[in-house]
Image (cartoon, rainbow, N blue to C red; front, top):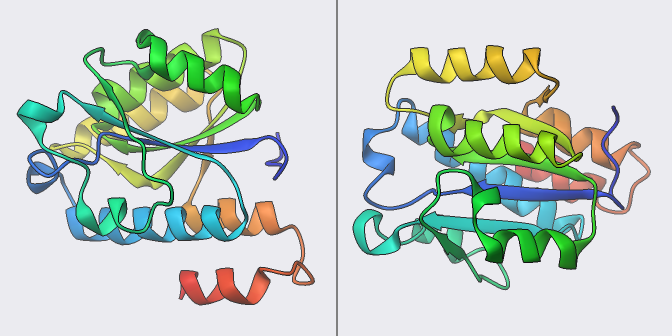
Length: 180
């Protein structure tokens, strides 16, 4: 499967203030999430942000919420985003087929969302350097299982350059600057 700018949407799951401190590799995770958000926005691609029980886990990190325009997170209580009617309504409204998933925790909300998106017939891509769990073994296991069931793996840089397709793309230089 090849990523397409007319079919792709970024789904950023639960990158929240009370959850992020416990994540393995949280600094690199945040760096990669910022790159993904900025790159997708430069390419004019839609972004869906979720928050798991905001009252308990806090808001999306300001480093992300302040650069996402417009910022309208979907609050959920289900682990899979697909268990939330507001999320499903947003999928219908956006009307795209490729979902590029990032966020936390890899082995819970990210995993269950990817599986459910596949079950709904969507093409699912996981940004392996933009997901994390408290335990690195949980992240590794999640990636192995998701790949085995048909989720396509990408890094943030790989996905952005695949979406650009050529160095002649109008946003190539700006995306290249983000990646560096």
